[in-house]
Image (tube, one colour):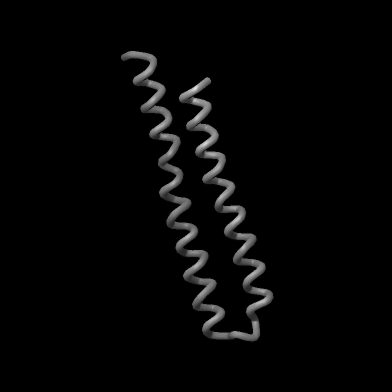
Length: 74
């Protein structure tokens, strides 16, 4: 197997984590919207936790992209 092909396969495997990130973000925001719809008075507290969850989940996506770029270009 050529080294370039192995790099592309490795980068593709590293990017699989982005599917999990998409599912996680969908769960976070669907739960956020439904909880605010049920109890609008809890919006300030719930919204902050939702944004924290978004930031932590998005960090996983950035790490996955970083690993993929490192595999491809280094």
